[in-house]
Image (cartoon, rainbow, N blue to C red; front, top):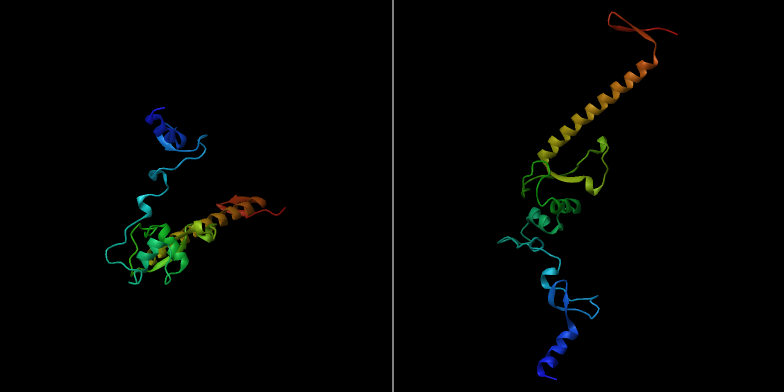
Length: 173
């Protein structure tokens, strides 16, 4: 027996060919193997460098809530939404700043059939929230108007009437 075969005996015992790769540390039946460094979950987005002179104690609630998803001085819902939206307003797509008024809004208004769930919440600037509320109110008026005319049309179909000089005249039955 040569020195070369003795040296490679240990290699063959623990190191295997696995998925077109040579020298993978694995069990004999290849059910378990040692993961390589690049196979671990995680990306460079998970580890974002803290900006230059930032500190959790400097009072920048927007920055730290966006970064961490929580801050002791920020309500939990707002901090969570800030992180989820990556610090941007859903309506105008501008970044939130420290002096901005942040308001929570329902993506689909509850009055228009939306639900009060996390998936239906968004964080908006105060003025963007005003514009979205005006838009939702317009949609609600359109919906109610449509429902009113549909109901009126159904009621008219139940009646016996004749058109006389562009005026519907009800005929008693």
